[in-house]
Image (cartoon, rainbow, N blue to C red; front, side, top):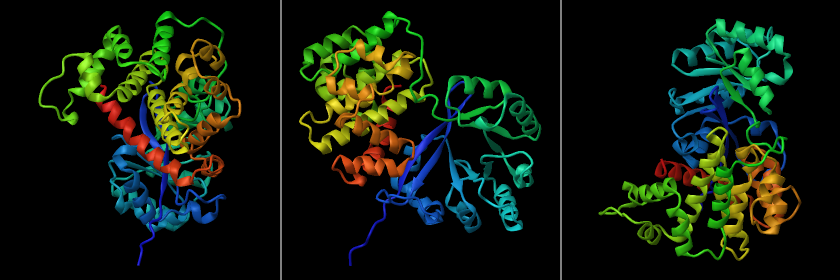
Length: 409
């Protein structure tokens, strides 16, 4: 009898510290990529489903050694699935929908005694959740529901109780600044991956050079000789290429000392993609997580492009994902950024928000990235692909990004 394997789909949202470095990830999941509506049962994740979610994609791949914030509703909390999770790797996030009953309080005390870090989600001062404060290590505040004075007073009181305050719904730079000034130490939201309006200052020459390098690397007809010449003019990229091919994971018994030899061994396509990403990292003026998000998007888009068989082996889709955060990376409007690059018209239109197949591919990846499962399923189905194609691509992209980061450090 055939065994039916239920896939579990996991997305992640970064939680940053005050220096805009990644502290941990909140994991977002649902048991089916084909479900089109959310039901109460979808939120009730059993211990087995949590284990499948972590093992299905790979816990280390998802978190890269950082803390994973995992949501617990009332049923999951009382079921005590914590035995499957390492206290040093997770933060158990008590959702605001959990009623603070004697049973809930007793379970939280037990988890606290066993060394688990607890977080209170969407905490409201004066609510029944106050009873759990002595057990919490993190408290999340929806900063959009507080004015500046109340936010500062609330944060100050929570800090006095020894908890770390996480600012949620940080969707703009000014919100980040206000939350940081109020005393919040961790920050969560989409402010660093959504386009924002900036003044029209000219791009610095160094950024413009890197942008043109990315565009040149991704020209369909670029030759090995041209790539070698481009890399030779950038010492940092040359170093990273040689470091990658000489890494223990590549399995060579001798050192490779020339860019030409490295290109032949790694393969032209691999070097083009890796060098493009490293060039983006060099022009980034924001948090390092932006580059990781760019890598994941680019790889996801590439795999979807390959599945759609658009005739370019996914290279155009890779460039689409690669450029999708350029406005945030550089701090300039997307229209200005794309004007500086020799992009295919379809990719340029997609980056500027015009609806076309490329934009639909990017929208599907972004929806999955943000845990908007219904939208992701609808969009990828609209492309003519099975929903599992996107979840598989995302899992592949997480591992690819982690490997790339390790190889290029």
